[in-house]
Amino acid sequence: MPKKTTPKKKKLNFRKERTVVLVKPDGVKRGLIGEVINRFERRGLKIVALKMVQPTREHIDNHYPKDPAWIERLGQKGLDTFNGLGLDPEEYLGSKNPKKLGKDVREWLVDYLCSSPVVAMIIEGVDAVSMVRKISGTTKPAEAEVGTIRGDYSVDSPTAANTEKRAIYNIVHASETPAEAGHEIEHWFSPEEIHDYIRVDHLAMFGEI
Image (cartoon, rainbow, N blue to C red):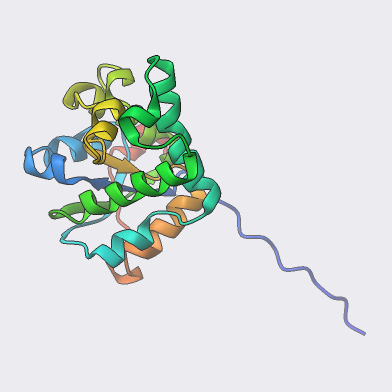
């Protein structure tokens, strides 16, 4: 009998990790689309898909995770912010239940992202997921380093957003993990919308293209 052969695993190309970035309504309305793209391209990351869309509520609802643990973590972040300031969450938010608050915050996020056009893009490069999040800055603008997108262009805070029952205006969304990026790539783009091309500066950066 012929020997069974084990199929070879496809080697990962660590220069081709992909992630999703959305320029949110506040970034679009403030004319920061080009600046956001410039920050990533100057770092050596490659835009392989790009479009402006007016998303439907259903599309945004399916963009965000529906996992109860994720929703509870979202709510707990809000509670931690108010507790850290010595404020009573129930007085300002109407609840101390992280599950309930998480559902509220998720609803505000959905409301906001479908309130106007957004610019969606796929960014490719070395450690693209973590690199893009580093360039974007932490989701709390007040804690984002100067030099990051949020640190330079956003002055909002979760405290203000939660008390006003809305999402934080922080310019961009960036996939949090490679698994999340995989879901968002399929959710926002068809295979025909994703392109491959050569960036000539990669010859200098990596010694080859």
